[in-house]
Length: 221
Image (cartoon, rainbow, N blue to C red):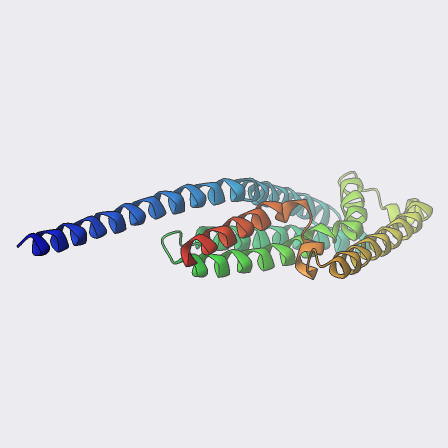
């Protein structure tokens, strides 16, 4: 009887230890995932600002092409700015949708995949809207001038050509910087192409990915 009681007591103690470990793991998981939500919060606000920017671009574009339907250059400029505003809103909406679909109740491996997919979506967004500003700043300037029915292409061609030159140099310089950073980091084994192109806006996503990697190691142990 004493052996049976000892065995039963040992089993009871083992179950209690397992429940305690499960509780500690759940607390650790909840704390880490709360930090992940905090890391993604600046990204969310950034996308909200991008949507507001897109709305502003749409209004500017409409105002430009509606007032200058008889001026081909300003008509095309207004339509281009209008479309660029729509693209900004669409890509920001897709990014926000990806953030909202992260299932924090899913297994850690699944959350890692969702976070990695979010980073890919964000990269497309930043490339499509961020780098495009090296080109779009000039049409936006022309659209503002078009509000006063001033056609910069006709009245200030030197400004337009110098603006095009600045855009080309800016794009080339940005591409060279990103390409060089990618090669240097890859050589040092410190980053992938995704990391090299993510920029400051993707920092929260990358920090969240490192946090999830740490959580996955705890889970395996």
